[in-house]
Image (cartoon, rainbow over all chains, first blue to last red; front, side, top):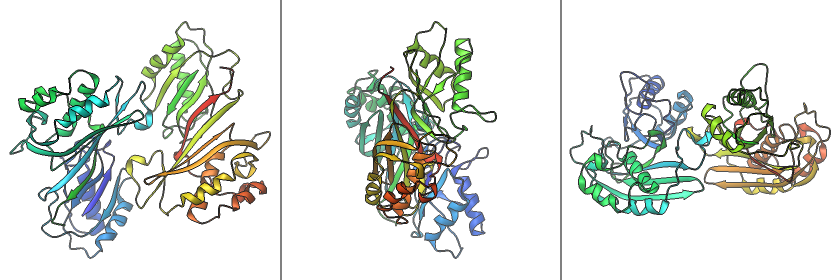
Length: 244
Length: 244
C-alpha cells in the first residue's frame, strides 16, 4: 500500500487515460521500472484533473523481493517532484482501497480577499466577494448525516445509489483562508466541489443557509450551486475500518 | 507606491538584468504599457533569484493622469499570475523605498519531516533530519540587537558597514513547518539565508546555540553556516517610519 501525495496541476487526474499524463499512469510506469515487472496500481480516490492530494492510497501486487517499507524511498527517487509517496507497507491480499469501508477526508480551500496571492494560486480558489463563514457553517449542518446527494452529483455518474453519509463538514477561517473540510464514507462524482460551490453561494448571500434543506430534497443537480474549480480541492487522507 | 507579491520561482530575482526575466523588468514593461510613458520602478528589497514576496515595495514617477489607487487593478490585468500587486497609492515625492528608515520582515520556511510535500516545494526548504526548535530559538537570541553581521554576509557585498540591527528573530513550529521570522532595519547580502543556514546547523546539532556568539565576533563568513536555499525565503513586508 502506498500513501501518495501530489500536486495535480500538471496531471489529467488520477486515472489512466489514452491521452494525457495521469498520477496512476506515472505510478504504474515508475513502479514497473523499479520492480522489473508490469505493475498496475489500484487507487482509492480517482481524483479529477487539477485536484491535489496529501494522502491518497494505492495498492498493487508484486512478485519482487523488496521490503514493502523500502518501496517509498526507492520510488521517490524516480518520481517527478510533484508526486511524493509518503509511506509504503504490505497489506492483506483481500484489501481493495475502494471496496473496503473507509472514511475519506477532503479539503476545499478558498482565499477570500481583495487581491490573489501568487503562492496560493495552485491549491486555493481565489474568491473576491466577502464570504460569511457563519452562514456557510449553518448551511453545512444540513448536509451532515445520511442523505440522498443526487443534487450534489454530476449527472454523468454511474453510481448505483446517490445516498451517501457525511460524518463531518466544517467551515473554518484563518486570516483570509477559508477551509471547507468534509469527511464521509464515500463521495459521488464532483460531490465535494458541488458542496463547495453551493456553500460559496450561501457565503456570498446568493442563497440562504436554510435553502440547503430544499436543495437536498429536490434530488436535482440544477438546485445546487456550481461545481467549484478543481484546483481548490485536496484529498487529505483515508482511514480504513478493517482489511488492513 | 506599489505593494508587490510574487512567486520568485521563475524569475532571476528582482533587479533588471541583461539576461533573464526579473520582477523589476516585468513591472517596468507592464507599467510602461499601461501608462503610455517609459516607467522605471525603484524597489525596496532587491530579492535574489527564487526568493518570494508578500509585500515588497516599489515606487515610480509618472505624468499619467490615473488615480494611484486604480493602478493596482489595471496593472494586475496585465501582470502574469505569479506577480500580483496588493495595493497602490501616492507617496511623497521625496520617498525612496531603500533610503527611508524602515523595518523589513522576512520569513524562512523549513519543512521538517520524513518525506517532502509536493505543494510546499516551491516556497519551503525541505529538511529531513530532525531539528530542535528550542536550540534554534536559543541561538536566535544572540543575533537580536545591533551587531556587526560580517560573518552573516556574502563576501561579494558592497555595503559600507556590516553593522545592522535585528529587532526580532523568532523560530516557530506548527506541525512539520518551521518558520524563522526576522525583522530588522536592513539586511546585508544573503544575511537572512545565512542566518537560516546557521540556525539549521544548530537545530540539527552540528553547532551549539552558544557558538553563535563566537560566530558573530569572528567577523568571518566562514565561521557561520551555509547559505540556505533561496526558495525557502519570503519577503513579508516593510514598514516605513516616515516619508510616507
